[in-house]
Every structure is written in structure tokens, then in C-alpha cells.
Length: 174
Image 1: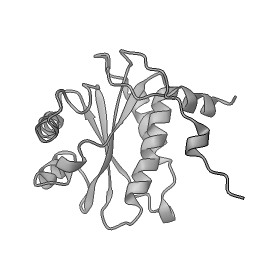
Image 2: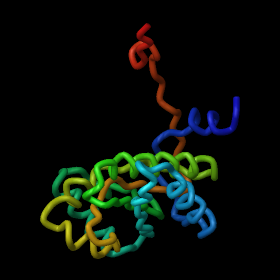
Image 3: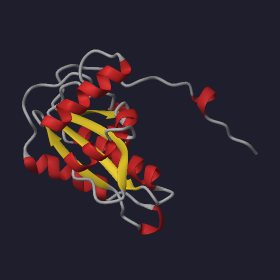
Image 4: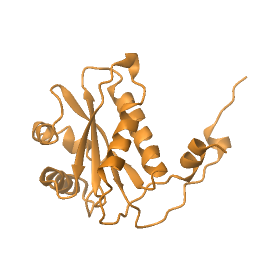
């Protein structure tokens, strides 16, 4: 099996991280993988904000998400790095392009020995009354909006990849 397929097969969502922050060269490699993803009409509109543990606005967002969802603990599971992906709100495929970038990033993280989890929970807060505050704090470009987030760090737990039944999830019409 080739290396890409191995990484896809072994990856799972990690929700517990070690304290250690990955070095900048690894963070930059993950960013590069995201930005190398294809975008509709080659618009290249995906923007990535890099937030590290201790970022005050990230802490405020975590508190807002917890209050809104009633869920205990930060939505990013105390990961040392959180990537917030945004895109131009006027481009129809911005969400798709951000999703593609995010998938490239989780696969890059896994291939570099890190764990990750894709985060949709901030969506309600990032689109609510505090939208402008967080857009500014996370340095989103003008006219951009939150699309998806990703937590990354060294794994402090092991989790087997999920199983699936191809018969349930795949059709092959003739």
C-alpha cells in the first residue's frame, strides 16, 4: 500500500494532547499542505490563522462555545495549536475549499507524527454576535468568515481508526 493510503487508513480524531508544542517547521509544513489544496477556479481564497495554546481570544472563544453548547472543556481539547480556516464569504465554494485544505492538513499532521481533530463547534459562535470581534482577533482578511478549524498536537492517547461498511456507504450504479 502506498504511503498516502496508509496515512489515510491510520488517521483518527485525537482529543487528548501532550503539552509540547510542535516546532515551527512542522507547523509550517502543515500550513503548506493546506494551502496546496485545490480551490474552485484557483481562487486560493483560504486563509489560515495559527493560534497557539494560551492565545487569549482562543480562550474566550472556548468559553463562548462551552456556554452555548453546554459542553464541558474547551472545544479544541487543549491542543497546543489550533488552525482557524476562513474564506471569502462571497465565494460560493469557500466552504468546500476550506474543507479540502483542512483534510490536507489533518493528513499532513498524521504523516508528521501528530494527532488532530477537525472542529466544527466554533461555527455558531463565529457566525453570531461576536463574529466581528473574533474575525479581528484571529486576523481574518476583510470580507472573510470562519469555515472550519483544526486542533493539532502530539498525541496523548491512542484511538483506532473507525470501521465502516462499504455496502452501506458506497453505491455502484450501472
